[in-house]
Image (tube, rainbow, N blue to C red; front, side, top):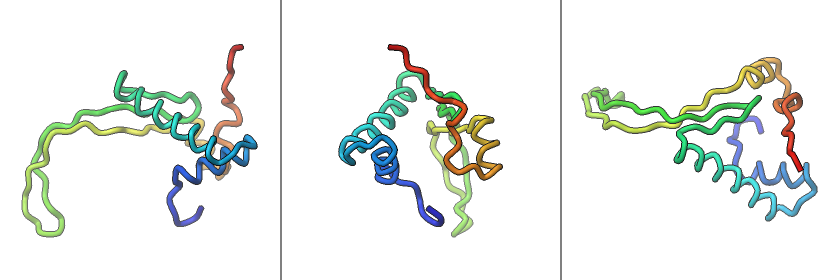
Amino acid sequence: MAGRALTRLDLAEAVARKCDLRKSRSAELVDDILDAIMGGLVEDGIAKFSGFATFTLRSKQARVGRNPKTGLQEAISARTVVVFRASQHMKVSVNAGNKGQLTKGARLKIDG
C-alpha cells in the first residue's frame, strides 16, 4: 500500500479474503459500514468506534482567508467539517508499526 490511498475496493478485497466472502458481498458490507458512519454523523453528529477512532462534526465560522497562489484575500463561508480523532489504542499501534493489529485487543462482542 506504500504510496497510494486505501480505497473502498481495497477494503472490500481485504474483507473478502479475511471472511471468505465473494467480493460483491464484501463490497456491500463495506458500503453498509460507511453508510452507518455517515448516518451516525447526520443523525447524532458523532460516530464512535471503541479502540479505533471517533468521527465528529465541527462547525466553522465564516472568515477571511488568503489564496496562497495569488496572495489575494477571499471570503471563506461558514461550513461543517468532519473531524477524525484516533483512539489512544490506534495511536500506540501505529507508532509502534503494528500493521494490521489495531483491533486485536478490541474485538466486537455480539450478543446472540
